[in-house]
Amino acid sequence: MVRDLVIESEALTKAYGPHVALDSLDIEIERGATGLLGPNGAGKSTFIKTILGLIQLTSGQGKVLDLDIRTQGDEIRKRIGYMPEYDALNPNMEAIHQVRYSGELLGMNPGIALQRAHQSLEYVGLGEQRYRKVDTFSTGMKQATKLACALIHDPDLIIADEPSNGLDANARNFMLNTLETTVNSGNRSVLMASHLMEDVERVCDNIVLLHKGKLAAQGRIEDLKAIDKEVEVHVWGAASKMEDVMKNRGMKVRREGRVMRVRHEGDNTYDEIIQCALSAGSQVRRMHDHEASLEDLFLVIMERLGQDVKSSDDLLRGI
Image (cartoon, rainbow, N blue to C red; front, side):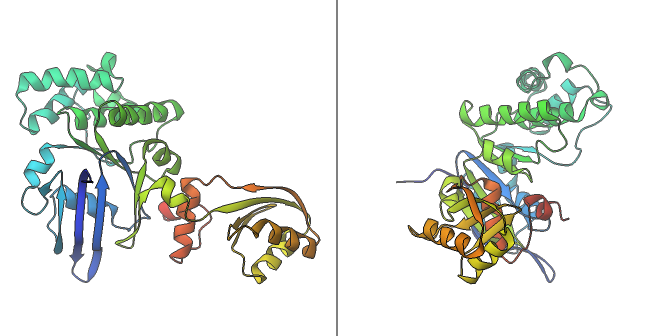
């Protein structure tokens, strides 16, 4: 079966002098929604700039929408909608003309660009606000305007960098709904970089995880979560002692207070947990297979990479 790839790279490498920002990446991203994850300094921004054809590779090769990133950057950018994390709007422009101008920069006829600007702003929920200046907008409205700029030319692929960053609950929900609709109803692909695991899991079916310029994981979220099954155990009394007993037996344990998550190693895992509880004098109140989240998957991968963190925010925000 031929795979429908929107981004692919082979031994993709980018170095700035002695610093290697991207280290021989072999990546395949299929049509649909993919989350781009990684700590600060992992290489996410460099990867985005590289696939947009904005910076030259040191070695390797890559394609976006079957176009060569080394030689066809201009054509790639015409078929991609890019929503940057940083502030890229003119505060003195009315939203309608900001979006229209984005279309003209891509080579659209001014009349068509204006028509498409109206449609794009309506799509992102700003139809009634389109004649307001950008500097009067809330953070959520500015994010929506950036998305409208990215969508004006009906691109095949949208790259959204931290699209829900700084938004309140309502604006965040609307942004994620819009991205979901773009993928599911609009038949478009999205590469979404975000530090919010819940948002990535809601919009995306696949992830690419970078760490120190290397590829740490890629694939379907559901498939990756199935690799490390865990049992969630709620205990009462002597929890620390029980944790020590399990670890002494070679069991993999993650603990937060009275709740422990134990690596599922086989059919006898439940029996071993009970034996450890008896040995420690602990009472098991509840025990069940844990429904893993993307946050859990991220922490497991980071643990394997030697990162001792309690949550994704610890690592992704550089705290």
